[in-house]
Figure 1 (cartoon, rainbow over the protein chains, first blue to last red):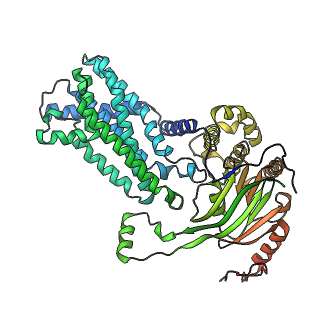
Figure 2 (spheres, rainbow over the protein chains, first blue to last red):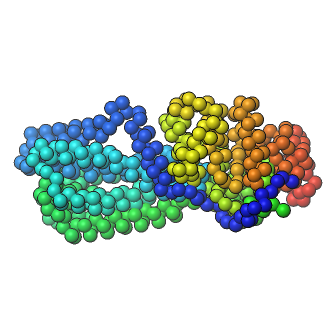
Figure 3 (cartoon, rainbow over the protein chains, first blue to last red):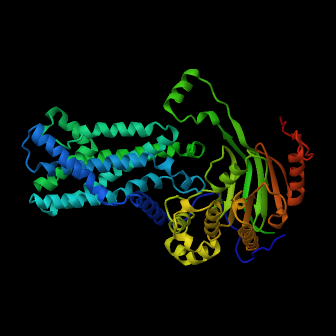
Length: 269
Length: 261
């Protein structure tokens, strides 16, 4: 027989489970995603700026020259709508395919798979930071300066992140079982582009739909961002409560769906 | 008596191959045709236990349930029946392509893989040089892994896996792609790990010289445990079974031998 270590007490046997540094692993997953996204772009981070710039020019042309409207600081209005929408759409769609794209990471190692879609959503924050930088620059150009109300943005974006994580957990898990989900998510994002006040303002929305709009987490964020950035006002309490409610529901439901489907990942990937 | 590091009792895993229809139209069609695709047992009532310092070869033809067994022990697959118990941190299940992203460099993949196996920032920093040295990858560590050969990927994965303090080391048919020198080095290291009191579970098809690595072997056939005993005995029985062109069952120890078509 082979040599035996005598010093150590006999190990306690338990069901196989992962143990290690969870926060470091999550950091590595985010870092990996970020590296892969920007390594193959020769212009790197510039692409994060280019897309909203093109959209601003395009939408400003159409809605000041073709359909004439006289909303003041119109490019800034577009940008405050576009940034939350872009973040939401990109984070949700990349989270949806995250489990199928990264199956090698967890197929043979029993890590908490929730980390994969959550990490992908977090990796999109870099993109967001760059676009918010663009917002500040364009804001300065229009004479809009940061003020204390901007601190509300952290809370708003925090709630939005929780909401997207919930949606991403649910859609990622469903996408493992049913590979059509990504197309449904893409279509939902297209619909959302028109339903979120990006190139129009909340004031233009008919009164009977206003209540409903506030329950759409992306619209709520756009609305609150515009109040904070363009009107120097704090977001109304009811709006915050609605956003918090929707985000909490999304996260809890997303996690529940994820946990329910998790046992099937092994045989479906 | 060395302590037990892994035990499985009445382990059963059932697969449903036809349920894995991945597109909506297939799902809808299945609802209307209402056919159950059937299922098979990937593991059928398997029981054994393994002690520290043992080296156990897992033998069996393709589809016998070897990788399924390791997946259950690694904790990535929940069994449909039976009990699995392991001691300590779950081990790395080494197989080709595990945990690596082709666009990341060897160094980045090393860190990610080590983090996946449970190492923290400080542990990785402490062990980095030792991992790199064992892998002999040298300057290639800065290259993207997509430019690596299968052997180089094995070097990286194996080097990380042996630097994780897991009491159970699982190797699934990977050593075959390494060159002779590295394979020899891996085998020497694996013996050392056994001496340290770790448990080696080794899936392989190469039975020649297996007794240098393992003391014991388990033979699986269609999910059932056919034989569990000293490595040379089990390997001999397995080899004579595989040599038989009709694969008739020739193991007297098994009372309810499966009918082999």
